[in-house]
Image (cartoon, rainbow, N blue to C red; front, side, top):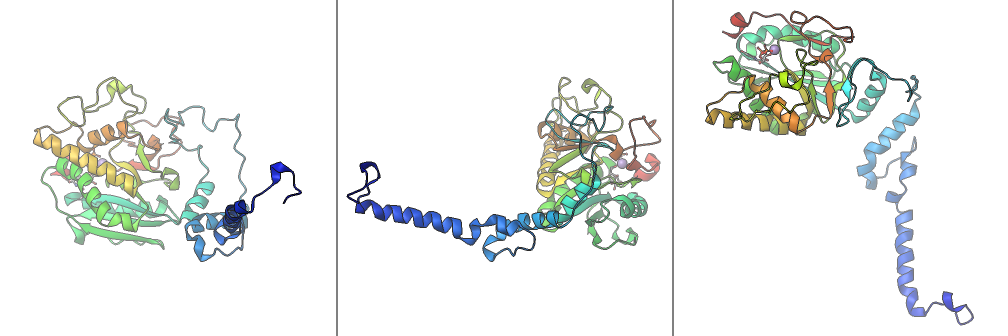
Length: 352
Ligand code: UDP
Ligand code: MN
């Protein structure tokens, strides 16, 4: 080294660390785990070392192995100019015209997601199950894996309904309550406890629905997200002061008049199992505090759902296409589809 310019000279003692550094980087570059690109290409075999990358490897392989043709999204062309399609916290509001179901289906097929649909049919409400399940088979998550979780005190009255492949009905026998308000409210407790016990293991997403409804048009993976709620059809145009939130400060569901984003419907919400577990557990605990304080929120579990979603913003919001009541409301022109609608019922007769 004696003939080299001073600045480049290396004392033999410096060679050892340099060799180690070069060997380290050489190993990182050449080791199987570092050659990710190769494993992302179609036909490449993912080595065992790369198990954590399997999901990405699969998704790239699938996306490169077919071409998907669809209209280009145009930055200067609105998909809807008549309704709000994004909340101020950047959650999509799902309306017909805002999504391409083929793109979404391709993405969820790669995830191989299973969707759990929870529904309660306690006491006389078992009569709604047949139409609910039959219409769900026609419109709900078609082409995806679905577990229907039917909570009931009358397992013998769950009707047999023919199911598509990859779908099953799981009957969960639970207790009933005398008051319909208690039946409705204790759904939060039961969903929360079954989430921990089995839903976390069995499904990726949970959709929690009222049973006195039917599906009447497509309801698919466009609704899925970490946490979603649905705009209540009676209040989508109302000012926050007019929302029927709980207004008594003594209740855990209390929301002051100058707060509130939307009024969400109690009969259709969901998300990842983890987020639904958090939500239902929090709502149940809040209802237990209310009970100890001898107060019951004005709209029961729906009031607590609204409180939770005000302070834990949903990552998607479903338009009233996803909960509608044709008997109560005239269909406005911007409502292009009615996907999940109330089945008329005699409240007195069915609840007593
Ligand atoms: N529910 C039930 N049995 C009852 C009362 C309520 O199974 O006796 C369940 C059922 O799933 C129902 C939900 O609780 O859809 C909410 O009650 P309901 O639909 O009567 O409330 P609404 O939609 O009329 O406010
Ligand atoms: Mn209902």
